[in-house]
Length: 68
Image 1 (cartoon, one colour):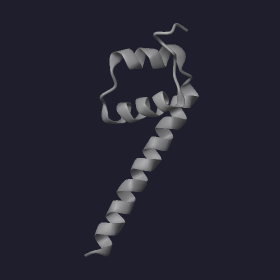
Image 2 (cartoon, one colour):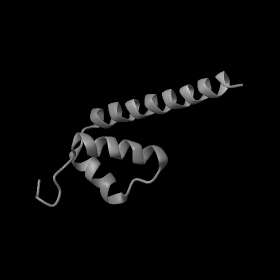
Image 3 (cartoon, one colour):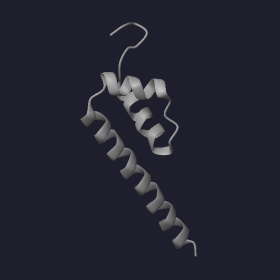
Image 4 (cartoon, helix red, strand yellow):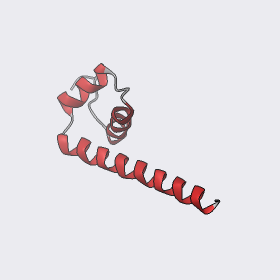
């Protein structure tokens, strides 16, 4: 790997999963992920992001329903 492309880090994997979830992943980052990342790292990051999103929605509904 060159100094200009350090590869993927745990933070960049999480950032890529969040970006992909809302559809704003840049082509440069997508290519970096496919070239130097591992499928399972992105799979688990996506799973964690999805579960976190579902938990936030569930908690928001719970709080709103409690106030009604």
